[in-house]
Image 1: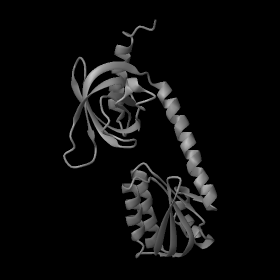
Image 2: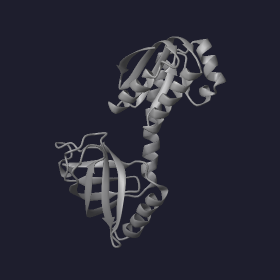
Image 3: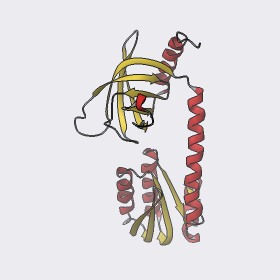
Image 4: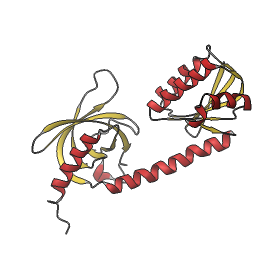
Length: 239
């Protein structure tokens, strides 16, 4: 199977040609490389696929799961009728999004982003933010022997935090935050992603710093943060 990749507004489009069978493992390799390069939205164009068998459907499932495991999105378009029938028999059409043409598929990614932003805004409004000033450690999640930076955590919620004193990270970087919340000083470690970087000219009071959003946080750990914030936020004057 031949695969050609192109990009459209941050979405990788993979044009597949030929047979998706036992020899189509290159799809998994190409998808994996896209994810490593930071592209989590992938659209597979099956217009020129003329054959798929059981092993081919397994290849698609493996690639699809890899994208899902990396919090990405993988969709399909221009699927020939005979190929779609096989996907339906395998039950794959119920789990995967299939669109009749490329334009509709690309628009669906935009719609997903709008819905995601609305949900995040609603989520942020559900959780209180606590102004705080404690020392924390922040390091890159990936890389050999990443150095832990000692920084100031100035704002904390159950879904994220603002950390002052660092300009070493860029938007989208995954990091590990280590902190000890008073008074028990129990060590906490959270995985997070950089979602905001203040502009030096527009927000000089917040520069240098990073806004992070916690990822894959366990319900028990999130509840600890909520309890800590609720206990301490009552001490803040609302005048």
